[in-house]
Image 1 (cartoon, rainbow, N blue to C red):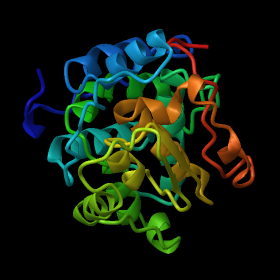
Image 2: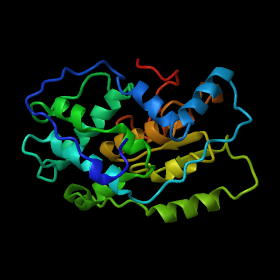
Image 3: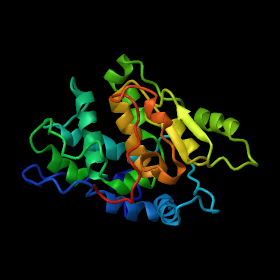
Image 4: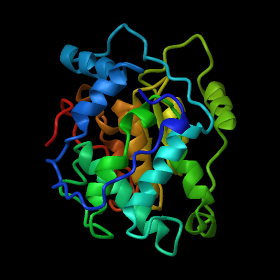
Amino acid sequence: MIETASDWPRKPDRQLEIAPPGHGWLLPILLEVESRCWGRWDHWTRTMEAGHILEDPIPRIEFEPMAPLPRKMHEKSLDCVSSYGGWQGWDSWRLFDYYLNWLLYGFGDSRQKEPPPEPAPGAFSRLYQVFCLEAMVAWPCDTFGELMAENRYGRGAGFFPTPEHVVEMMVQMTFPEGDDYRLKTVCDPCVGTGRMILHASNHSYRLYAQDINPTVIKACLVNGYCFAPWLVRPFPFLGDSSAQAVSEPETKLQSPEASMPRPD
């Protein structure tokens, strides 16, 4: 069990060659790990089986500010993608993009059906050894937003995530206590890494978003797989399709057709 940042990271064997597993190989691991933490995928599964919204409330997640362990895990994972042992170089955004594609392929996302091309020889094998899903899921925070904001490409692009406490205040103002908002639609027109949508997932199943940057959209999707299943696998019986015309296909956050949580 990984409990502190000192327990991490694993040091990859750079001579070890690991063939990419099948599409969605990380999804069963995610379902097991998440069930021991928050129970949202179990709630999603029971709702899908029932074919209608349950009386049970949405399992609540108290999203935290930056936690040291998931940050260290993501940094070490990004470092191992590069062949020279560090990700904060001239191609840092490309390495980040590969990391997110690697995760989306592992989760079985319909937009990433093939293993992403390696930016450096052996990247998949090293990442397979270093990445720890437990460290990400057990500490619910948007680490991607902080890392991207500190990255020089992110700074140059003007990317800056809204602080967690401000996001939570805005969500509380949008969803005052006393009503059932599970079928209310939430749309974030500048979603970034998904911070607002994650907090809103405590209240609503109908989550939509868009952004002009494809990389931050991928970060939002990865956060959705870990913390908000109905963002990435919406309930089909809600019959929502209007949000798919919000923006251009390459920049909008399109939700794949809902299905049971298994690889395509």
